[in-house]
Amino acid sequence: MLTITLNDGRTIPQLGLGVFKTPPEETERVVSEALELGYRHIDTAAIYRNEEGVGRAIAASGIPRDELWITTKLWQDHQGGDKPFAAMDESLGKLGLDYVDLYLIHWPAPKTNKFVESWKSLGVIRDRGLAKSIGVSNFQVPHLQRLLDETDVVPAVNQVELHPYFQEREIVTFARQHGINIESWGPLGQGKYPLLELPEITAAAEAHGKSPAQVVIRWHLQHDFIVFPKSARRERLKENFEVFDFELSAEQMGAIDALERGHRVSSDPNEVD
Image 1: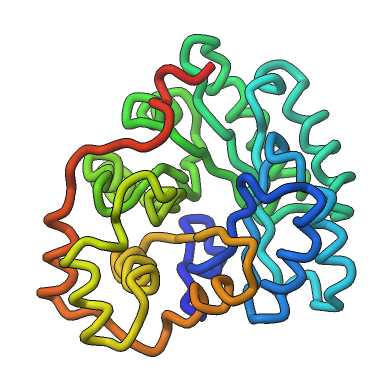
Image 2: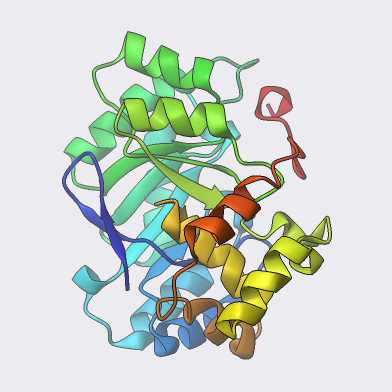
């Protein structure tokens, strides 16, 4: 397993499992199978409504808590005032945990304009030990700049939609300038364009004896992004995890880099409130 050291000194597994859209009734099985296969990083959120399943899988796994990295997120309806503290307590209760490793503001919700206030609350949550690290999700450069200008806490990570057709280069550059690590969600484009059929991907897959999905995951890893593809199928979970025994060449990385199209497949963060 590859790891990355965050700006707060903590070490995060670079590859994990995302459970976005994993049905609550299937979550315990999926996470349990992932943990059996070697995953130690699980990314969930309050709005996914499957924190309980993640918690049951953790409890049943027998894996020491300090060997796991668990992320959850603050939803819009709990931004501002004392609401983030109540949301943190609710998530911990559902997960059956004393703390999470990473707590994120899920979306900036700029029209509501409570994300700076909420970020200050996350700092208190971290200081209380309820979240070991804190960060943000779906923040654009202006949102990040406001956090830097109006608070003294730099996010450990910014989790954004990122895949070969949508590489968020402005955000990546800004984040690296300020010591913020990037997490890629939707790393395979959510199946909304034929990513895994593109010749730049399939040629690299053939050269390495790997699947196109494995090549794309490896591309994320080699860019030092933290990445968590999702799947509910054990064979795909296994496949997604078998990406540590090969390396893409500079030419193969460059060919995938050149696929940038500015093609977002999900919501614009400035429009989510």
